[in-house]
Image 1 (cartoon, one colour):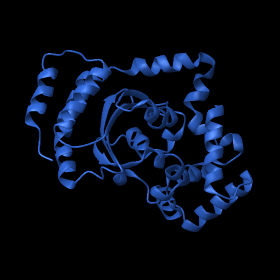
Image 2 (cartoon, rainbow, N blue to C red):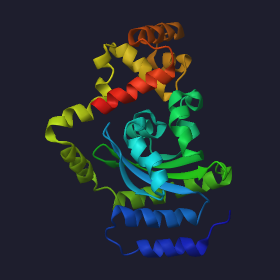
Image 3 (spheres, helix red, strand yellow):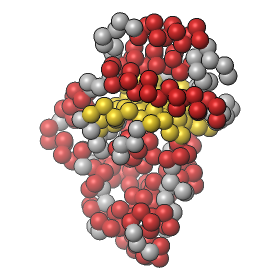
Length: 268
């Protein structure tokens, strides 16, 4: 795909002279800029702060798609998303999903029960930390029938990263109040439980810290070998912990494990 210079200049023209933009305006202009460079099907812009529920700043989904890509995602699956963990790191830059995903991500229960519903061939994200523990992720998505992003288009997006990061920091850095408002809406009495749900979900099931850490990585899509390397323990030790967890919970599959995890999250 060749660069649409006229569309690109028109997007820049609309940015010039604007001292501020609401997220929807910014998302629209970002989309116009990206459409001038590469082909894609969807855009979604999420803001992440700590382990709080991500905020949807802008998206181009129809109502049915919005349920899968946004509403269902925000209900709990985001905690297992490689983009979420990269945003929390943080790890600035432009990244393909497959560059960030654990070694067993595409065979994980999270992928089979949630991510596959998106029907995506590929997702690429611009990761922009904006301060106050907030990272904004601007995702470009291509459906299965469209296919993955060609290497030359990905290279072009990486070249555009410094410009995108500058624009995001100029127009989207002051969004902490959106998270504060979401917390206030949940209610003062639920604030601590809601913010710490990801950290406490397994304690209610009497798992040790080590068991909880291993099971979180299992659900994210890490193999026993990958978990052992990350936690500096033997692969055999990882497998023993996994068997003990399954015995404690009275389950025999990762499908049941994910079901328990999401159920516990919804109760916090």
